[in-house]
Length: 153
Image 1 (cartoon, helix red, strand yellow):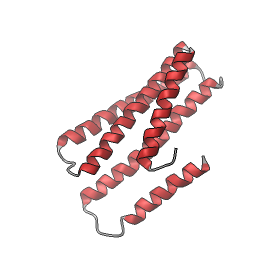
Image 2: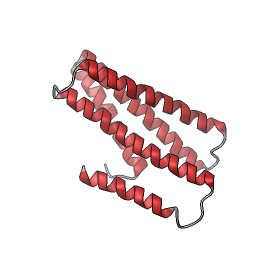
Image 3: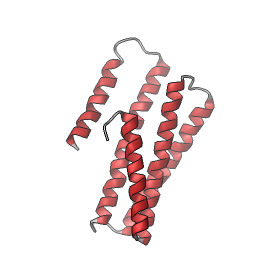
Image 4: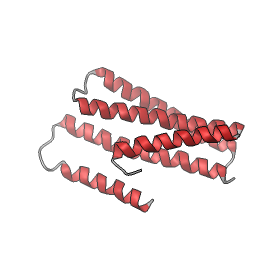
C-alpha cells in the first residue's frame, strides 16, 4: 500500500512539474486539473468502497450502514457519469486522447457504481454469489484505475 500511495504522489508531482515545461492554454490547464482531480476521486472512492466492504465482512459495520454509505457513493458516481457524458456530447473536448481518457473515466465511474451496488446487495441479502459479484466489480475497478493512473496491478 505504501508503494501504491508513493507512486500516486509521484505521479501527481510529475504532472504538476511537467506543466512548467511550456505555457499551457487555459483549456489545457482545465483538462489537466479535471484529470488529476478525477484520478484522486476514483482512487479514494475505490478505497472507501473496499474499506466499507472489508469492515462489513469483518463484522465492524451493519448492513444498514453499508447500504446508507453505498447509496451516497452510487448517487455521486451516477452524477459524475452523467456530467462526463454531457461533457463529451458538448463538443468542447476536441482532442481524441482527451476524449478517450474521459470515456475511460466514465467507465470507471460506472464500474465503481456497480461495485457499490453489489456491496449493498451482499450486505442486505448475503450469500456467496453476491460476495463474488462484489469482488468481481472490485477487481475490474482496480484494473481500470491502475490502467488510468499507470500503476502496476
